[in-house]
Image 1 (cartoon, helix red, strand yellow):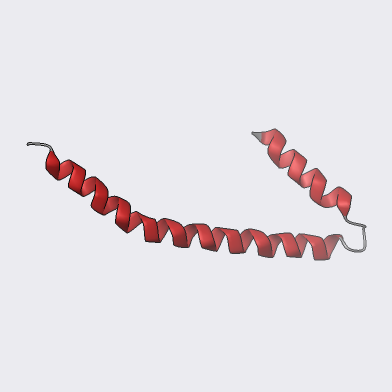
Image 2 (image 1 turned 90 degrees about the horizontal axis):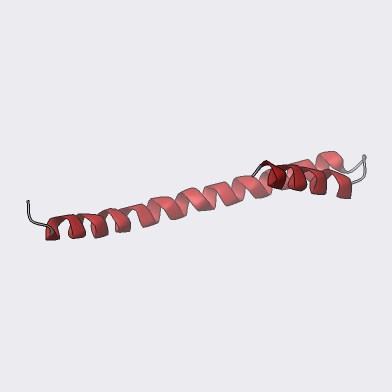
Length: 63
């Protein structure tokens, strides 16, 4: 799993020139934060649906 992080890190920094490295890091940081916010939103929205579904399945079993 660590090789993925190393590959992404090398990909990001080898593609940018030294003068543009700061801007590239900021752009990728913004992109990562947008993806994280979207993932959290999806988890919160789907979480209620999953809770209802699992509760229905749990109620179907006898005590």
